[in-house]
Length: 140
Image (cartoon, rainbow, N blue to C red):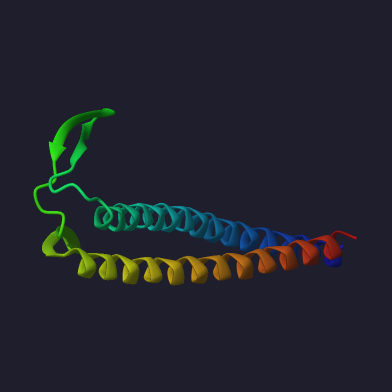
């Protein structure tokens, strides 16, 4: 009877560890999704800025989003400079090339963060599988 109690206690401990690891994995998966969304937004920004370099007209017409899927027509007055977020709620005006370089650095930072998060998720998955195997062996 003492052995059954010991097995049950060990199974409860494993179940608790499993739940903790699952919660960590869920948080990492959510973080990975947010990182991916932010990285994709930066990629779209980079494409837009690079596309500006290829526009021949002096003051090209654009659609400016105003929310709710609605737009206003506008004109780009200076396609050589961009106002770009530099973090902490601040923006700076800079030449288009500098803005693209800044965006490239940020994309690389996101790529690194995404890679590290994916690696952490793989490690957690391995730990979860190991815990499941241990629990199965105890149930036998």
